[in-house]
Length: 146
Image 1: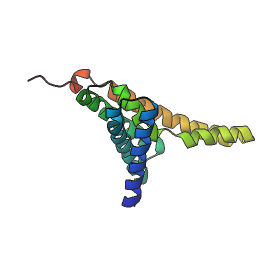
Image 2: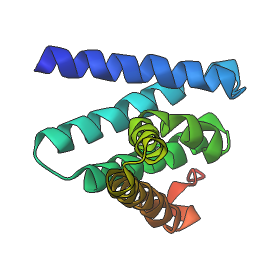
Image 3: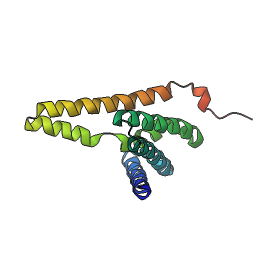
Image 4: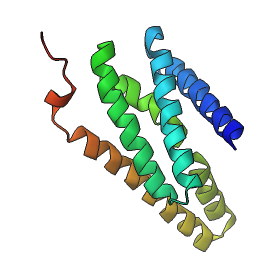
């Protein structure tokens, strides 16, 4: 189980760093984005393994990703969005969206709408996680002057 989790975290790191390249993030930030994406996936995977719902696990993961993005934005002197947007890449419910559209196209309306509702819960939880962390005062994330 630990080996599988480490492999998933490494895959999330590589996927996030690769998405950073496609998103035209500066080269010095690729590893930072990868670390944030890997950390977010670790939170999500552990939460799901503990039996927490996918929506709540997504909320927790995105809250941690957003918190890390705000902290590392100050440390790296970059906008938080540069780290945040690639960082949430591993958490996006892409297969759920694909399955919803597939079911709707083949005529399984009930299954498609059911899957769509589940995806909307996850996306809503992700947005709520970002809003909660971005509502924290900016002064908490500034470097203190000596």
